[in-house]
Amino acid sequence: MSQMQLDLAPLRTPDYAPDATIQERFEAFHELNPHVLDALETLVRQFLASGRRRLAIGALFERLRWEHDIRTTGDPFRLNNTFRSRYVRLMIERNPSWADVFATRELRAA
Image (cartoon, rainbow, N blue to C red):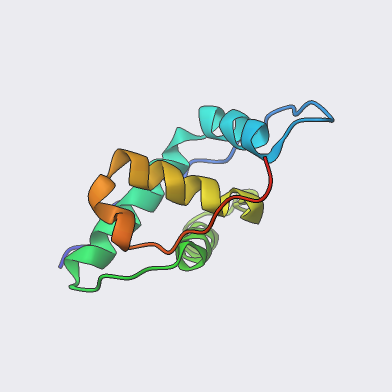
């Protein structure tokens, strides 16, 4: 299987309002960094093509960080772990067949 290309462009940090919710911070981050979602989806497709069916978002975040660290010499690839559940939900929304790939729980924070 050929390696899929990941867009490892530098991350842009939005200016958050001090009282912004996690969802609002996620939306601002995603708006400035749509390539993160694209890279996550690329990794999921690669994983599923290998025949596996269950995946944890933590593994994807760590893989992106690792790939960035070995391929670039720029700033660290800082992904906020509080955005993990938001990325899972966004990927499932965009790819409904992935609903069984990820385990999700009810969101406890806005």
